[in-house]
Length: 100
Ligand SMILES: [Zn+2]
Image (tube, rainbow, N blue to C red; front, side):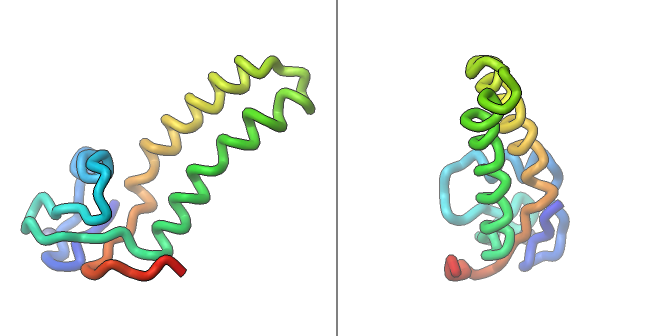
């Protein structure tokens, strides 16, 4: 779970999900209220996780004979799983870090 770089307190899964759902660059610490940013390495990792279900929809039906709809449903389930495990990979930074 992510730890606030300002107060050092760990965010719970629910708090992290709530912060992530607000589509903003920064997230507010539920303990101290200080703005926190997703670290550059964590951002790269989460975008990799986000891309993973895509090949499943396009490649898997061709190699397995599975219909596109079943692959699509699997990709949606996989995406939901990916989003719910995202808080475990989230690392925080006190300042916004450059992308690369
Ligand atoms: Zn804090």
